[in-house]
Amino acid sequence: MRLRALAAVAAVCLLAGGLSTAQAASLAVAPSTLTTVNGQACTTSSLALTRTDAVWWGLGGFRGVRLTVPPACAGRALHVTAHQTGGSAVATGAVATLPTGSVDVAMSATYGGIFTSHALSVTIDGWYVATTG
Amino acid sequence: MTRPVRTPRRTSVRRRLAALALGALALAGLGTAAAAQLSVETRGVAAGTSVVGSCQTGTPVRVSLVSTFTGGRYVVTGVRLRGVAGPCVGRSIALQPTGPGGAVGAEVRGTVTGADQTHTLPAALVAAQVTGVAVVIHD
Image (cartoon, rainbow over all chains, first blue to last red; front, side):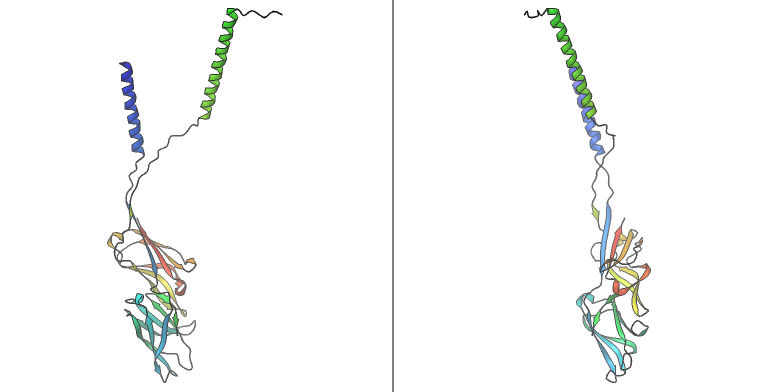
């Protein structure tokens, strides 16, 4: 009888020990969120650009710009600045919502011409986009 | 040449000595076994699992730059996020402009304030050098 009682007590002790170990092995972890976004320009290719609305066949400068917009850039905002190389802006143009394909942009002033050389810089949604032409 | 005669008394003494030697050896073995044990401090180990989700589902966040023309070139002064989902509002956010060679400029930390928000960069960056912005929204 004494042996059976001792065996029962030992079994209960083992069970209790196992339970405490199992409880210690679990941990309540609160759910969390992690969201990552990788923002990029709508295009990494150079945009084809041509000077338009020439004054005196271009001798007196230009008053517009024509760009070919890739489909990924449709619906975004475009800004064009004609400027002296490394210098101040001469004329600006903007399109609030770009269509796909060819788009004509009217500039705020005449730029370029036979006596002055002006560079053109373009951004789409604020991202700098290289141009050709 | 006469062989020594073993008396019962002498045999009994030898047996006792042998028993003592065995006992001593057993004790030494126990000591060695005890020395081979390592005292380990009691520490708790716990583990749990949880699903890490995203607060932005459906429409992706639109990332644009705040650029101005200064000194003959476009410079970036801020990052604008549009289309941020409601569950992301109030959470922490970190933004890092990147270029072809990795990080460009300093990281910006803040809090998501709404669906449309602008985070100002600590210093203006040359727009031509910024090709991406890495954004992390977390608890």
